[in-house]
Amino acid sequence: MKLKKFNGKTQVMDIHKEIAKLREQTHVLARLKTKGFLDEAKYLEQTTELNSKIAKLQTKIKKLNVSDEEDETLEQLDMIIGYFEKRQKLMVEFEELAFESIVDKIVVKNQNELEFHLIGGLELAEEI
Image 1 (tube, helix red, strand yellow):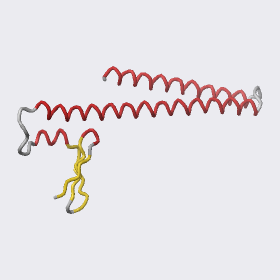
Image 2 (cartoon, rainbow, N blue to C red; image 1 turned 90 degrees about the horizontal axis):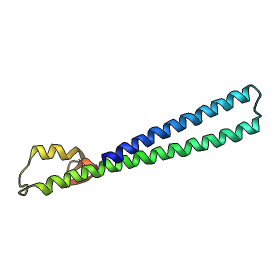
Image 3 (cartoon, rainbow, N blue to C red; image 1 turned 180 degrees about the horizontal axis):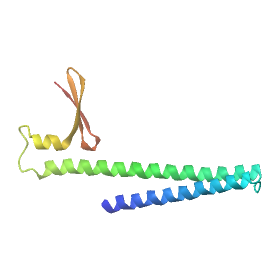
Image 4 (cartoon, one colour; image 1 turned 90 degrees about the vertical axis):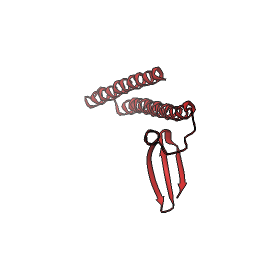
């Protein structure tokens, strides 16, 4: 999983480099148009194409980032499952260490209900 995360980060860096190259090309086109070496129609055609490529690459970055977040969520859920599977005996009383490592935050929904937000994105409602 760590190798996949590293490869994802290098992919994102490569995409950012490609976006930088495409933006530099749009600046070159703008300079050529300003100096009169490129007519308006050709300028618009080429900048539209470059901007389209940039937008596609930005979408790809967003997808890679979402994938990283999903991997992290799965990792956290595996940790919770592993914690309870490795226990020798059932948990019959409050264990502060377990609670602090699993519960991300507690939200008071109303005076009769709490919502526990666990690592990994799980949310559990509890009436009091």
